[in-house]
Length: 140
Picture (cartoon, rainbow, N blue to C red):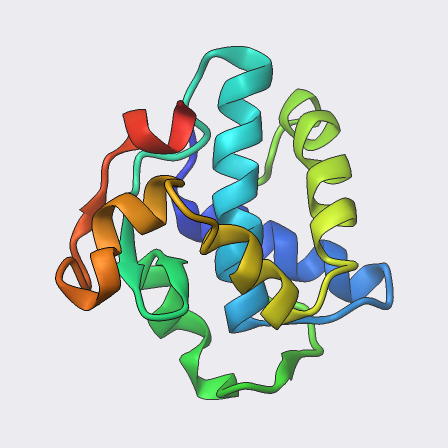
């Protein structure tokens, strides 16, 4: 299992290498789908960090802060990766990253805002703002 920051750095670097840089907002949603689909494919947790229900969807606060200096701009440079991601994990998450990085930030926000999904169940029109989204809801 990795830290969300490790997967975030890998994701930013992959998108930069693929000439498809992403914003912090896109990164948050891509991490959400990586966590969800990794679990669906393996039955395991990709990273232990929790998502919180923020206004624009699921967010991992530590990752948000790491890339917040970019504001709404694309992260268009590679970042130092402290922890290499193993080949098996790369093979699982690369297609997820490639698929979701093709969507705009607002398309990704719409996807995570669907009625009755994990974010919607916790956020509840703002009453659950910044509350943790339990992994079992994400994985269901």
